Length: 481
Ligand code: GLU
Image 1: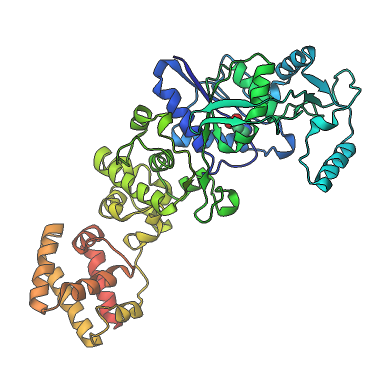
Image 2: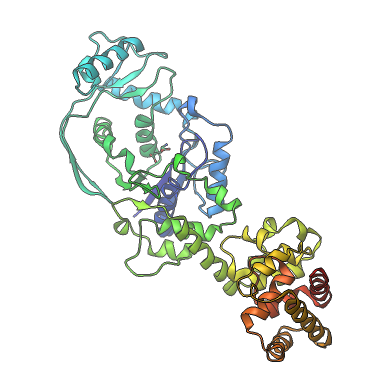
C-alpha cells in the first residue's frame, strides 16, 4: 500500500519543539513503507499577515538537522509543485468553482462590520455564533475581493481517528466556513483539503487542535466527492507545569536553539519520537533506522505527553557516549567544533581530542565543553578561597597545604614517565607517604590544577595537561600560599 504523508507548517516563526513531532511521525511512517512511502513538505503560507521572512528556511534547516528529508517539496520539487500554498491559487479557485457549481459555496457580500454585529448579537444572547444562521439572501457572482463561503448542510458525523479511536459529532458546529478570503487566498480549512487530495496524501497527521474542526472537513470531503484520508491526531505536548499545551510562552525554544545549545540531533529525534510513543517494550534509545522500523500508529498515546528537559538531557548524555563508543572519538569530536572555549582556538585537533576523550562521559550537552574545559587551554586564575573553603581541605592549615603541595611537586618532578598509569601509581604512593585521605590530597591537587568545580580523573587530567603545565601550576599555587 502506498503511504503518502506530509508536514505542512506555516512559516509564521521558528519550529518549536511542541510542534516538530508533526514532522517526525509522518516521516517515520513514510520511510517505513520504503519505496512505497512519500513524505511531502508543504509550506502553508496563505496567511500573509502572519508570514515571517526567513521562516521557511528555518523550517528546512530544522528538518535537515534532524535528518528528516522529504521526497516532495521546496528545494527538491516534485510532481505536485508548487509546494507553497501561496503559489497554488489557481488550483484552489478551480476547486472552489466545483463547489459553486454544485451549489455548495456562495460569494458572501456581507461587510465585515455587519459580521461583527452578528457576532456581538450572539454573544449578548449567549448563543454560539454560527454564520449559517445569517446566510445572506442575495449572493452575487463570485469574483476577486468577495469571500467565498461553504454552504453547510449540517448532519451528524462519525469517523475513525488512528490515535483517538472512533469519534462522532453532532451537526451543531458545522458552519458556513470561509473557503477563499477577501484577499483571494484560501483558508487553511479549504487549502489543506484540496492539497491533500491533489497530492494523494493518505495519512493526515497533525496536532489534535484540528479535531474540533474535523466535522467541517468531513463535510468538505463529501461535498467535493473525495475519499477521506486516514486521520491521525497527535496529542499535544504539555508544558512542564499545569495542563496546557507547550507553547512559546512556556519557553518552548526553537529546535535549532537546542542544536546551538549543544544537543545532538540524534538525541533530539530520539527524545521527541518517544514523547508520546513507545514500541511496547522498555527500550528508550533508538537510532533513526530503529525508529523507522518500529514506529506504528497504534502505539501513539492518545493523551498529552509532558515535555521534560531533564529527560532530553539524559538522552543527550546517552547519545554523546554512544557516538563516542560506537562511532569512535573522531565522530564525536567532529560535532564539537563550535563548542570549545575561546582559549582553545590556538590548540590543535589532537590536543582537543585528548581533552574530549577524558571528559565526554561527563558532558550533558556539547556546550558544557565551554565551561568545563577552559583550564586545559589557559592557566586558571588562582583562587585561594576555593582551596580553603573546600569541604575536605577546610580543616587543613595553610602550612599543611603548602607542605602537601611541595611533596606532590617533588614526587611528580621525579616521575620519569608522564603516563596515566605511572601518574596513578605516583599518586597512590603520595597517599601512603603523606598519610592523607584520597579526598583530601586529590582535591587539593585537582583544585590547584584547575580551579574548576569539576575535573576528570586526576591522573588523566595530569596526563593531558602535560608535565610542564602541571608542575608550573602547582608551583604557582604553592608560591601564593
Ligand atoms: N499549517 C498548519 C499548521 O501550521 C498545518 C496543519 C496540518 O498539518 O494540516 O499548524
